[in-house]
Length: 144
Image 1 (cartoon, rainbow, N blue to C red):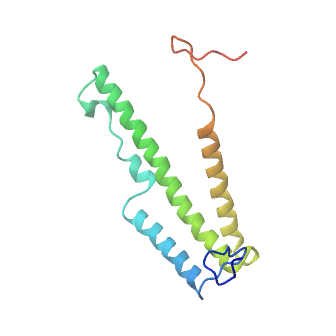
Image 2: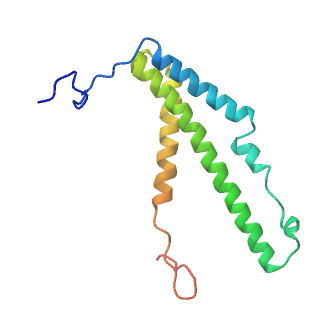
Image 3: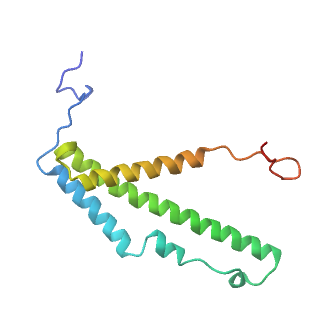
């Protein structure tokens, strides 16, 4: 049977960290998030990368398709960067909760954590919804 000092043993519900280790980690996360934003890596800045169809060389059908794909990629990148930054923020708040206890963290931090997690759940629930079925002509049937 494994003992508490045995590295193969499960620590159970106990998380042992050095003094201020979680605070330092939360500060590092906050600094990382600030650095990303200072470098211009934000959903808003990515949105500025949008290009018009004319910038793809004209109004040919193929160029319109390329422009649409590019626009889709930029929108997806905006979403992913926003999620990444929200999760970094949520991890920082979760670190504070782990260190100080839920009741000892400011209510605005807890509310922001819950907001981030709710938005994340809504995003991934929406992403998992099955795509509408289409008939052989590519038309989505109308539900009655």
